[in-house]
Length: 548
Image (cartoon, rainbow, N blue to C red):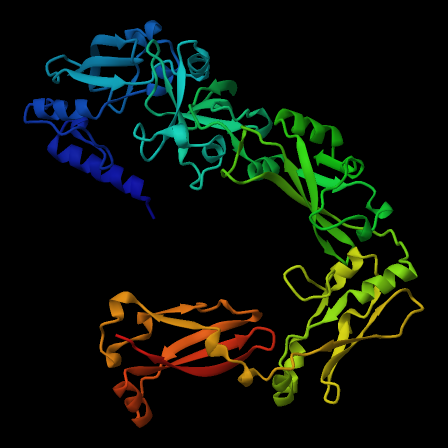
């Protein structure tokens, strides 16, 4: 079988032999050429259209200095060199803008047809790494901070250094460069890095800058001080976070809770046990305090944690204009240290003295307990220097016991209570012990309030006064808001500092009894009181007479 190729040749021979057509008129079916007119020439419209599509090889030009570029350096592409050639008419160089304009026209090889004169503009000529380096380092280059959203409108004088470096919206702020004598590419991006240790928080920024154009041209990194006009100062929280400052109490194993008192300042000897470390280096911690002029004013223990023998402290520093804070706020750092494991045995006398100052909650009314014995679950064990339960009394719990050098107690069942119906007393068995050998509960007795709650003349302890503007109202139109009550809601009543006013209202069902009162210009006031120890609420009434 003959191949397709041979078949094609054979037919061609027959065709030539019978018609005697010249060979050069034959063309392969895969060949193509530019569309021509009847005279086989390029039309004016076609060459104009073609001239617009021509591109210049920009990459090579951009690597050259603008002043060195000549016509022979211009390379065009995307045109058929067998049909056309390009004549460069002129090169217009703009050194200030690093731009070159190439004027050219496209012609046919025979020069019979040529296009309109076209202009190709190429920017960023000669913009390379060295150029960006020179721009960043030029003495006439100035840098300013900008908000990418608001540009020039924002006032940075109310912005802190820390807010600029770590804004709430990442990438919100940036750096802009200006230089009257040098070209600044429009697509130049100034990126910045910073080191916390290099910031002085004096209103200026100390940054490492790098110029970048489309990830292709990247400059070296340079250190720059940016006069940013930021608000000077820094917050203590930011300093601690960025510096990774840690504070410890040295050799806690040589101390016990009993060597400290809550909210009592440490003496100089104990303050000297404080260690400030950064990156586990004590020297860096000392340098940190010096750099920011942080001078210790006082150190206070704030709480004890018995479980791992931990003490929490606050370190207070002298006033410092560099540290940003509220007007009445003190400059402080909080820290904690564990393993205050020194065990000091409490003496018999000290232990007995401690027990003498324990008092079980007794602010229950006798009839309250008789009606509902379960209210005793609200009983609390207090430590009181004056033998009274008041605002100075301390609730006894494990951390307080440890602060008193008492380390043996049943924390799951610190005390249990019972009401003795014969003596009318609360009896408590307290499971606090002097040492390991001591396991005998200690009995404490507290006398409850012997008044009956309903026998107390509460309405004499609460005053009801009608507001002046309401005195002319009809008695049936008066509302609870027309009254002034003393004490008010949530305030304590008389000497019963554990009894507070709960609710106050007017009887408004207007039944016969109330209607009869209203005829005599009277209303019934309902008020309820709460025993904040027993959590019981009691309601009472008082008849108020409107005097005109």
